[in-house]
Amino acid sequence: MSTYDLIGLYPRKGSIAVGSDADFVVWDVFAQGQEKRLTNGMLHHAVDYTPYEGMKLGAWPGITVSRCPASGRVHRTTAIRWTNGSEAGGSRYPRQPC
Image (cartoon, rainbow, N blue to C red):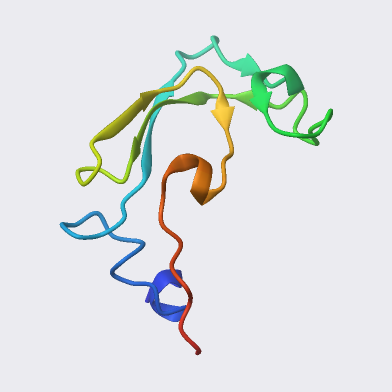
């Protein structure tokens, strides 16, 4: 049983299927020895620090597919970006009582 099953959102969320709201990321994996160190400047958020500063990254988000295929939006990313549903154009699903 998945988390989405437990909170009553499956199959609208948590599934890559026709009619589901499937947002996912394809990661670009760095070659051995080419890892990057995370800096706060690489992130797009509203704070001036990250507890992950200096962490070695073996991959970076390369392609973000948002609500595909309904909207067909595909984003090539060069930085991590956190958005809320309204900025991203996504849908909010109220959770069902457990």
